Image 1: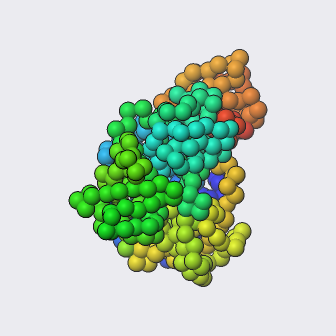
Image 2: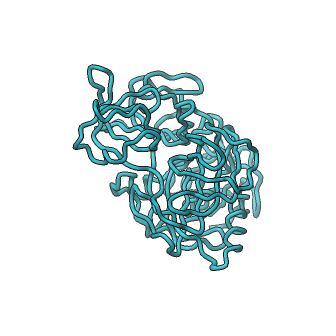
Image 3: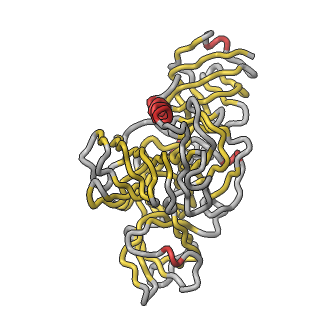
Length: 386
C-alpha cells in the first residue's frame, strides 16, 4: 500500500534529470549540504517499521537522533505524532536511509487549564484534534491535570497564536520551558519581545540573540518561572528555519505563520515563494495548514505546488513489526519494541483472520488514531507469519 504522499514524492523524483533530491540545510543543526545528494523531510511520525514521515519510510537504524538544540536522543524517543526533521540519502521507491533525525517540539510548560478539546500551557492554547497522547496519559486529555508539565509537538500558528498538537507527553523532569513561534514587538533597548500573547526578556549575552528580529520564527528556552512583570526569562534562542542554501527538492508541511502574498509567506519558519506554484484548495492565508513542495533557492522555498490541508485531516498510521502481547478479549495487541496499542475490533484481514494473531506473528497494520488519541484503530491487518 503506497500513500498519495509517497506517490507524489516518487513522481517528483522521477522527473528530476539527475535523479536525486538535494537537501535543505537546517540552520538549527547542520544538514547534508547544499547541492549534495540527499533528502530532507519534516512532519509528524505517522508509522514505524522504519519511521514514516510524509509517507516516506526512513531507516533510522544508523542515524544520529537529537533534539533541536543538538542534544543526543535515542530511537526510543521516537513516537507516533513526534514532529521531526529527517536528513537522508536519496529517496528511492518511497524509502531512504536517514543520517539524522531531529525531534522538534513546539512547547514545554505547565498546564494552566484543561477543556474537552484544548489545553492552555504557559498561556498558549493547544488544540487537541487527531493528537497522540503518551501512554502515561491513560484516557487521553482527561488524564492531564492542571499543573502537570508537558511537552507538546505540533503545528505552530501565529494567527491566532496557538498550537495544533500532534503529540503530548509528560515532561515532569523539565528544568527549563520552551516556546516556538514568531517574534513580535522586539525592543533592543529594553531587551524584550513577544511570541503570541507571551512576553520575554533577555540578556545581551544570551546564546542566539543575533537571531532576534520582528517576524523571525525561533525556538526560545526560558526558566520555569516568569519575572515579577510576568515576562519569561530567556536562556537561549535558536533559529528554526532552513539556512541560505540551494536544493533541487524541498518540502515543508505546517501552518502558514505569516502571509503577505502568494510570493511571500512563511510555513513553520520556512520562507515560501509560491508565485508560480499550482495551488490546491486556496486561496492561501495565514493560519491555513499546507503541504509545500518545490526547490530551495537562497534559503527560500520556490514552490511548484501548495496543497491546503484540513485542520481536521487524519493521517493514516502504518505499523510494521511483530506482535509482543495480545489481549484477545479486548481485541488489542502491542507490537514488539513499541508502546502503541493496536485495536483490531473493526479490522479487515489479509492472509488470515483474527484467530491467527498471536505473540511472535509478524503483521502490517494500517489504520487511524482512536478518538481519545491513545490507540491505533486498525482498518487493515496483513498477516505475514511467524
